[in-house]
Length: 280
Ligand SMILES: [Zn+2]
Ligand SMILES: [Zn+2]
Image (tube, rainbow, N blue to C red; front, side, top):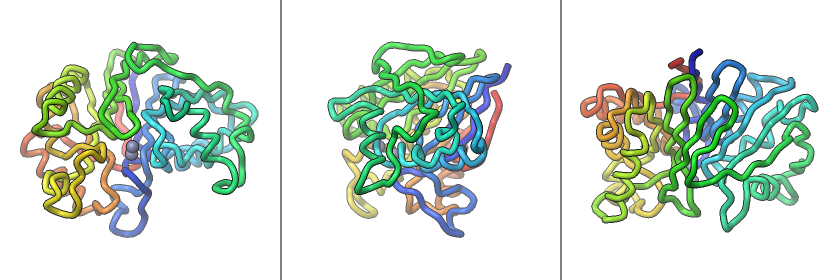
């Protein structure tokens, strides 16, 4: 049995389109994991729409597990075609926050005046599940361990084990280089990701961008630099690192340049690109 990973959306913050983004892809966060007939979909950004188009208007059984509920992680849900099929059995899962649950955030997104179709029309969405933020749980073939991260309104990274393989999905996390809380966060992530076959890590900014040497300072915006992602992969001795949550301003040449630079420090580094699929 293999664990298959497919990237349907790799962009952060907002979807982008145009010739400059063709090789990397413009859709926001959505990563599909498959083991046999079990399907776990990580986040429902606009990439989820593309996955829905691929699956078609057909009965689908899957769990959608959300890291958090920012737009770029939920906007594909109203366009996920299998959710409209009466034969689908979809579970929507995530950590409840003081600002609301997954169900509440999805319902708020799908109501007037911002959207014409309400959440109850997603007839295939059978179950809404609150998951713990600090203890492991199981979703079908997948054993999931959450780790709370530094991000506005909170986010969890997930370590997912299935078929004897391990994937760490750490998007929208900030390690605040140079601060005590940042050192703690970095060390916790390095322990969490230890020996993972694949680490998918936020790499939205370059260090000059993060520091405000190119545009506004991004301290506290909840994202990592490419250097942070590489440092975690090295410290945790992960198999492969995928740079993820590309900034909307980062075109194909920019992504390729970051990837090439990161490989000098960690050869098994790849930029996550939409449509890429790998089997572990
Ligand atoms: Zn995001
Ligand atoms: Zn976010």
